Length: 338
Image 1 (tube, rainbow, N blue to C red):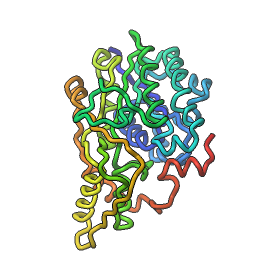
Image 2: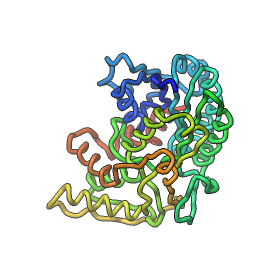
Image 3: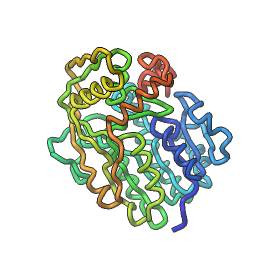
C-alpha cells in the first residue's frame, strides 16, 4: 500500500482539528485545512512557516472550492459540520445544507479527484436514547434531533461509494473533552470544568442521562491511526469511539473532585441540579474498535479536567464565561453565518 502523505482536513480549524492538524504536521504529513475560520484565523499561527501546511478559507458547499482543495491530496478527514444540537436548531436550513446536502458532493468529488481514503466523523449521538447496557455499531439508530438524523443519513451515502482504491470509514465518536487551541466550552466536561473553576459552581442539567466521553488527544490519535492502517482493516467499516460512559451527575462529581485537589484550601464547588429537556442517554460499546484495530483510549475525563485547569492557570482562556468564540451557537449568531 502506497503510504498516505497528503491529507485534507475539512473543518480543520475547529475544536478537534486544532489538535489533529499539529499532530499530523509533526509526523511529516502535508496538510490542507479547509475551513470557514469563523472562530478566528490564528489557530495555526505557530505553524505559519511550516511548508507542509496550507490553509484554505472556504465553504465545503462550494464545489469549485472542493475541487481545488482536494487536488493533490491522498486522504480526507471530514470534520466540518454544524456541531451539536443547539447549534443545529439555531438555523435548520443552514445546518442541513452543511451537514447533509454538501456531503455527497464532497464524497463524489473526493473520489473523482483521486482521494484514496475518506474518514468521516459521524457521532455516537445517532443512537439517541437507549437503555441497552452497551450500544454496539449494530444497534438501530434512534436520532431524536435533526443533527443526529443527518449525521446518520450521511453514513450510508459514504459507504455506497466504497470501491477498490477508495477506502471509506465511519467513526462515531463520543462527546469529546479536553484542551484545544480552538476551545469549546459548550461540551459537557468542558462546561462543568469552566463553571467549577471560574464560578465555583457546577450546574447539572438533568443528571441521570448517560453520556459517553473521549479525550481529545485520543480521538485525534485515532484519526492519525486511520491514515496508517491497511485498507482491508477499515474499508466500509463503522466504529464507535468512546471510553467512559457516565451519567452527567457522575461527570459533575469527577469535575468537583479534580478541582478540589487542584485548588486545595478553596471552598468546595457547589453542585446545583436543574431540570433538562434533553433526554439523550446511551452507553456505547467500543469493543469492536479495540478488537479489530487495537485502539484503546489512554486518557480519562480526569485528565481532560486537569488539562483545562492547567490552561486556565496559564491564562490561555480570557473571559471564558462570556467570549462567544468558545460557544458555537453564540458565535454563529454573532457572525450571522449563512
